[in-house]
Image (cartoon, rainbow, N blue to C red; front, side, top):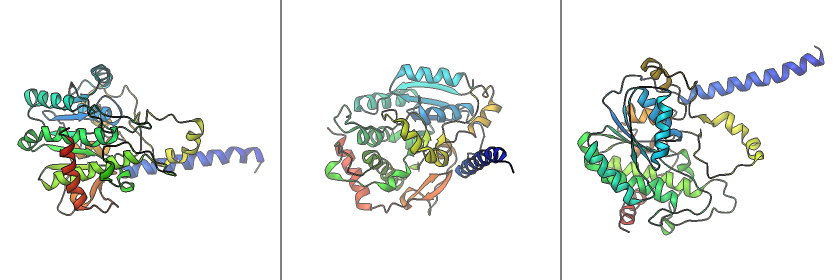
Length: 340
């Protein structure tokens, strides 16, 4: 074999191998197989104008659902609706302002839901963020605790009567990073600098553990609650981070093996309901959210209390050893924090 041919075959072989590895990973992630219409179903999605919230809204709208898009910016919500309408004419899209960093905004949003859409089928607690520098809510809580946990905690509490009356699902978007977290009640709601040698966002991880504990307590009280990890997804979630060129090089193996796209088909494919259900099967990042919002079933053995959450569109046992005392104390401390 000539050297020139070898030089050609080696990169082709490497490229083909990487392609196969990637496709096998995508197959393992799973997808929602149910494509039945959701006409008449009402879903509330926090953070619906961007990232996984947007992709979930698009996928559910394509299945003819009514989507209440709970967004901080009405301008961005309008832009999201215009983009969705370029892809599907199906479903109903209703923007309502919600800033999870403000208790007043959460209360206003809840009153709007109670008066205008008291009967809904699912509340998707999706909105979340990860910050590099000290940032606080209007009530002066550090932003991860204040938005990722406490904002949704208050929202569910304000809508609890409607949730019970409708037997509505509650979807809690956590993260597998909860397995690397711990809850320090002495620093709850305070900004704590990342420890030396710590390469992940500790405050974000902790807030995701709080999400799981929150889901556990809700399940104990009889709510139809589902907790999930969407996986590492290609969205604007880490927009506050400023990666350098070498970060892309260092993380390229991670991208290949773990990074899921928010969506994976052409922007012009959604022109009808039939195409819409095909589209809804191809959202890599949103699959777990869609599954929890529509199809996942908790059992006596597999539920948030027993430590199960949804990832790769199936119930998975968490590695975290949940502590009942911590679970109950976090619930109490969260209620105390609402009375500032």
